[in-house]
Image 1 (cartoon, rainbow, N blue to C red):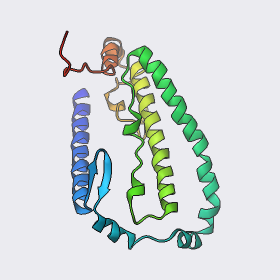
Image 2: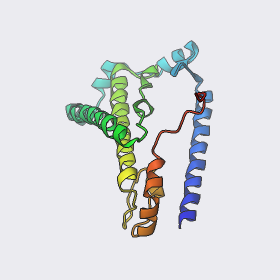
Image 3: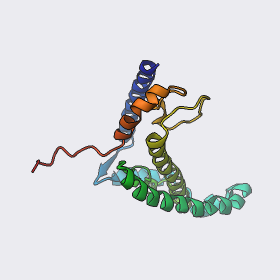
Image 4: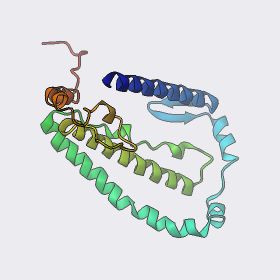
Length: 202
């Protein structure tokens, strides 16, 4: 059983590498680079992108009425999202420090770079910033909870879980008491920060 799961995890890693290759191909195709962690387009590419931009006024005038009316409802979700962002950050700084668990890097999950796209108008850029933030906060919070689950209860459920987090497949089988009791500490050790081997020993 565990061998089969490890093989599935290897397949998932292979798929991830294939996705990264496709991202590299897209970077080359659409001619953008990263400098100091920031996206850079050539002036030529930016000028080309602007030719496809729809003005904010036309964007509003041609929008569906349902989209306009529902916008306040969508943006009202910023209140709970910011609350989740702040409370989960506080949570991991308190609890993960106490448990010795590696903290989740927020910047790995909250990415805001779509405003660099010249073919988006101001409204579209704001919408993209909202979606990027919302999905980033959810992913950030989920990883924090996933590490918490790995620390306290790394046991798979008896029933299938749709959209389980990436750590879930490595959890113990439901009902495997021996594996849980003998392996729980090792499962926790996997969450601890790795020693920095670049620093010379004193």
